[in-house]
Length: 399
Length: 109
Image (cartoon, rainbow over all chains, first blue to last red; front, side):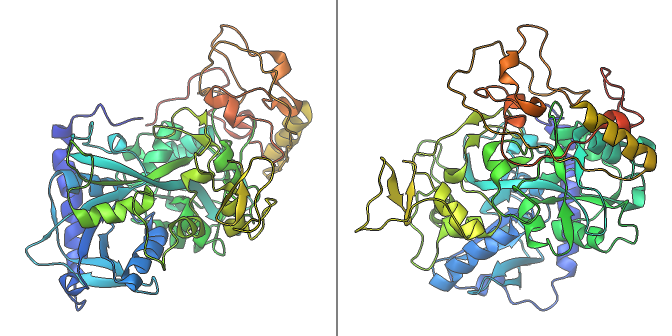
């Protein structure tokens, strides 16, 4: 189900309640963290989902180390980010920042509230409740591709789930009779503002606000709940792919078989691989690019806040990163797929696919970084590529 | 899906034990892909690639295990593309009592 046709007026109070609850919750944790405003300037403030924290830790940590920028981020939920940006919501309480090693730290926002500079989530804005088309003064900047996954405990014997099984498990709970996922206390969901739940909603047809089960609040909350389940065969949850990758010692990703698909695929070529082969080729259905949103000049389409422009420009390759930060490598090591490594593309959340050839491919580099090996030839300033290939990042890429 | 896969999954369902059938499908040349009418991106009721009742995909486009070996155009073509990767079938008919092949899924309560 898509939410772009919903009335923003009707959902306004609901969104406000979500945001309010999140801010009260975070405010209660604001015990002794140092003021965010005391971080090395310039500081930019983001709001959105928790799915991208592994990526943010590498990028923001690198920017901190370089002394370029301090990124402060609060993660109450994907759609709360874009709604907060559109409504000029001032965030309070505590937020995260990343030190020079990429380690997540906490700081305190001003009591009077802090304006949000950018929003971040794993789905398009129109998939969020209360958001129709973006106004022309808000830009949508694409980051790398992120997979979305259905996970089970390591002790579960299950290896695959179909769209229809997910429909019955998450839409009906016990009443769905989709063995072994029939225990509502072992079905771990998020809420309707979560990117992973929105993606699964679009895939399965279960309305995002009607998922059965226990709300785990965050991606990490789902990992903990699924991994520590006392009934591992019955347990199931939803998380961002990069979070699942970071927790393979605790949970296992199920292969996903979409409607009309003859069988299910993992995001990777195997349960132990990190090659994202099936995402890159389009046989794994549940993926979408990460989105950054910021206020822009409608004429130039550039972010008005120059520091935000520097930040989002790293992901769109419009801004050169500091010498210590390799953005493509950080994206790959976070479990994401840069667009330059994709062989297919789509323009909407779980929309139609088309073949894609990157103007400056990084498929060889992706394989090397993600898996430690590539079949591509190496190259250098003194060792050219053969067969019309182009040397990029030390490998002979297709063009 | 091949008969042996259905049988294996049916036995699995009866025994309440999961059975995994790994399916591999070799890639094939796509330079001779025939043209055809668009087909739906997804079948809401089944697991078999479907058409809209218009021009059916050329039978020559389907390789072993019903993988799609022609140039993909529709979403379902990409999802079922022949690859050397392993995939794992989930038999809706055998495992989902509320699933009725050919019928819409019941509304979420």
